[in-house]
Image 1 (cartoon, rainbow, N blue to C red):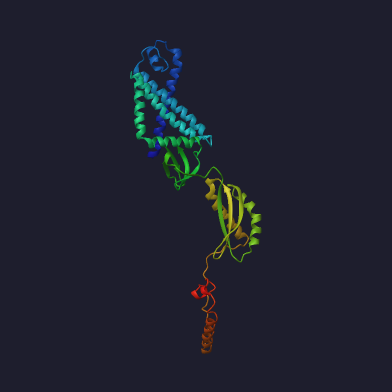
Image 2: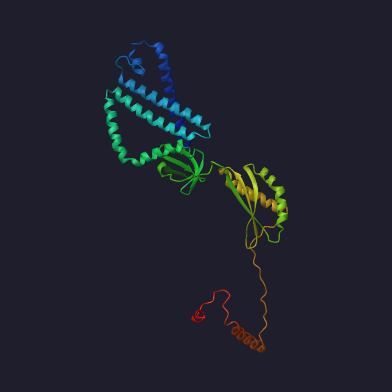
Length: 348
């Protein structure tokens, strides 16, 4: 209930501000034809009029309405235009941010100028102050410069899926100082632009969805491959997110009780995990339909083996055999290591 009231309040405020801005522009345009050139109100109201000494309060209010409303209109139009673009939205977002800050700066200077303040001296002071602040705010400047390079070198765009320092998510905003990334759980990570040293852009090319299925050792591999040759095109039709494939890569490994087969398919990064789940489902249905068994861990229980006891005759024969073999092989080197040369062998 509270959320609904908040939304309605914001809407009412937006409507009121919009009506004020609309009325301002109507008076500004129509007043040129209805007011006398010497009219004090219109001369103060019209910010483009330099004649006479304007009323400071009216002129300041006019600056507020004109500059802020013009800034909002430009940013609104650019925002709507950016929604139509797949690429270039980051540049538009950055431009909107610059327009917003520039509008505030221009408004402050115009108000000061109306109040009779020497803005030239202020600009000179701001230049010196900016130099001092710049030396102490190097991380801030580094973030801004890094943000500009990200945008103009097209490293990534709003809507791209990237991995930064192990965090995988979708880029939701590229600002002057920071970049915001949202993961599948709705968590948003805010990263300073200068801290993005290395990243992986997952959306500049098609991603690979992997699937591995197992069959029993007793199953005919050639029979399975024959079934797969007919089924893969149907699987692609069943999973429209697949752009290329699926492809059978062959036997990937041998398990304790299985022969593992590998399949891959190319798709958009945003649908990769769902494609992998869909591939698992389609291959399970295919194996069930064609009586291809998928192995699972089993425990084999055997009866204990009964061994015969040795006789005294066998003990004596074994002892004589071992002694005989030791004597016969005494001069021969072991097969698993080289012979060791002795001083007698060296001296010949």
